[in-house]
Amino acid sequence: MRWTRDAVLFVIMIAGAFDSLVYTWVKWFWRTAKADLPAWRRVAAALGFVAVVMQAGLFIASWTRIGQDHVLFGQWARWVLPSFLVAVPLVLAGKGSSRWGLLSSSIVLFVVSFFIVLSA
Picture 1: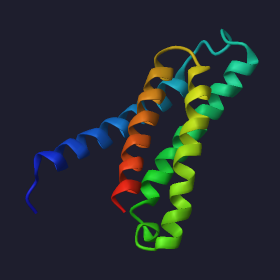
Picture 2: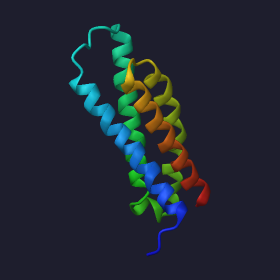
Picture 3: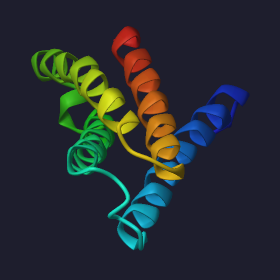
Picture 4: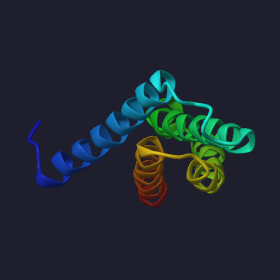
């Protein structure tokens, strides 16, 4: 297989998105000062993390049987935008570098998933 510039850029974008998600996960669970946020912001940020993980799961699912079946692909495509619209405001409720890592991961995963939907 010959790698084109587009394929290399795609791999770099996806690796960056998942690297950002792993970085945020490590920062999130190993953070020592969790009490500096009000309870509603902690809950919102935790739900935002779950929403971004759901986006990553949707992205990975596009390469399974879902990508080959038109009915399943249509159902998959209906979940891409709502997961992004839920993730962004919830992620912005967080604080610190983990917020920006989750936000960048969410945006990249949404853009790539959106282009997958357009290419079908």
